[in-house]
Length: 132
Image 1 (cartoon, rainbow, N blue to C red):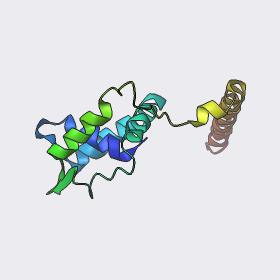
Image 2: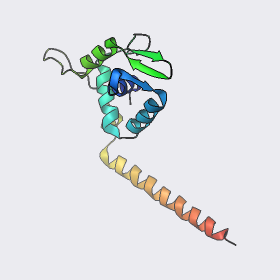
Image 3: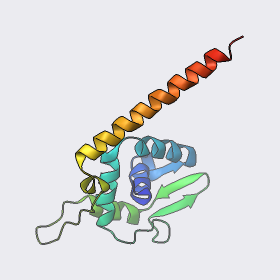
């Protein structure tokens, strides 16, 4: 997940573009755990603006208790979300998913599931053994 793009997307969703830190942290946690789609989307958007730095470029201002997106920030976000023109190359970053064969991922996932079941079983057995 691209932190900078996520902050811009969160701030633009609030009235006036201002959000207090608690709201930003909560929304960030929700998006960070929402799945691979969000991470892929923010990565694609960030690829349209290399070297993005929301604070030094004046896209976001720190205000008492929170952050506020500037007009420049809104413009940059609109540019990132705009569909590319035909002559503009589309840069899609390579993800780890393309490097790992699907069967290997399934085998790893099954192994992790099996290990979790074993840990839970061992925990239950320990809890039963400690009951007076």
